[in-house]
Structures are given as C-alpha cells and as structure tokens.
Amino acid sequence: MERGSEDAVRRSVEERARAAEAPPGAPGEGDAEEADCGEAVERLYHYLDGELTEERRAKIQRHLDECHSCVEAYGFEAELRQLIANRCKDHVPPSLLERIRAALAEEEAKQATSPAE
Image (cartoon, rainbow, N blue to C red; front, side, top):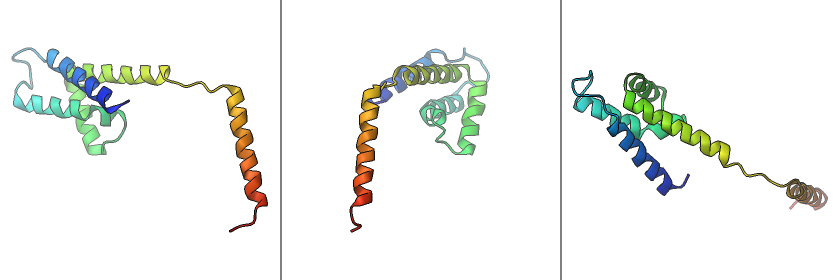
C-alpha cells in the first residue's frame, strides 16, 4: 500500500476508534485509556504485520482484549488487508512464464559454457 493510502486508512481507523469510544463512566475512561488507545491504533499496522517485540505485542493484545473501539479498528484493518491481499493478485499468463523460463535457461547455459573470469 502506498504511504498516502496508508495514512488515509490510519486516519479512518483513528476516526472509527474515536467515534466508538466507551460511554462516560465506563471503566478505564480518561487520559490513561486515550494513551493506550493512541498507542494501540498507532501500532496496529506493526501488530498486524508481526513487527512488534513480544512485550509490545502482548501489551497491544491486552488492550484489544479490553477495548471495544480499538478491537473494532483492528477488525476493520485486518479485514481490509485480507480483502486487498485477495483482490490484488496478478495473474501471469502461462506464455509469459514459459518465455521467462526459457530466457533463464538460456542465460544459465551461457554462463555454464563461458570461461570463469
């Protein structure tokens, strides 16, 4: 995904998380929750890609287990990534694959018969 598109999706996820905030008086309300939500949303992409340390991954997972708005953002992003992965597959025509194989075989043959430099 291009950087501009990723930023737009990130903003959309953040907006969804803010819109789905817990009602006033809910457990965990306040600045500490917002900091956790901010970190969870900020690191969501790294979490999905498996790029976090075990400690940070566990921290984000605990937050997702307890925060409805962030788990919705996680679900949205995971579903979006799966949709993109399923729909954005290039199909290479068999004739092109055969031409590539032939060119590679020809190149290997040339290298095998030419003296080493």
